[in-house]
Image 1 (cartoon, rainbow, N blue to C red):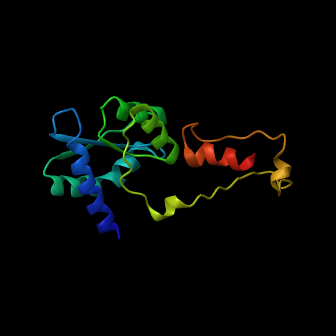
Image 2 (image 1 turned 180 degrees about the horizontal axis):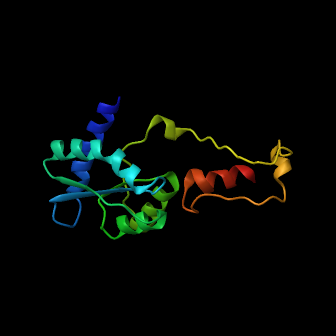
Length: 152
């Protein structure tokens, strides 16, 4: 399954890279920063090596500071491809009008959310009324948008 997904990504990346406006000597790839940059780079290395071998070009991971930065970098052609969440994909598509989803993992088709509290008296959603919450980035589908939606 992973090989098929990577092959699909490579083929689509090749098609996509032909559309970029910069010199096609390097494919610039990033991801929403939902983990430490070192972890994102570690996870990217096998895909980067695979794409370099299949495409015959340099593939570079470009870390970004936050969710809006990856959207802006794609919209201004400083990136060619990025791992996005649902909401950041919509943001890129609204800015560019031409975002193309390449691959979706099976697990991304489902949404689950867990609310963690240290208060043993909180057992139901109703018990959370009036409490203070911390969410992820406002541009995060799973860390902000969907939990807020399901709490309404």
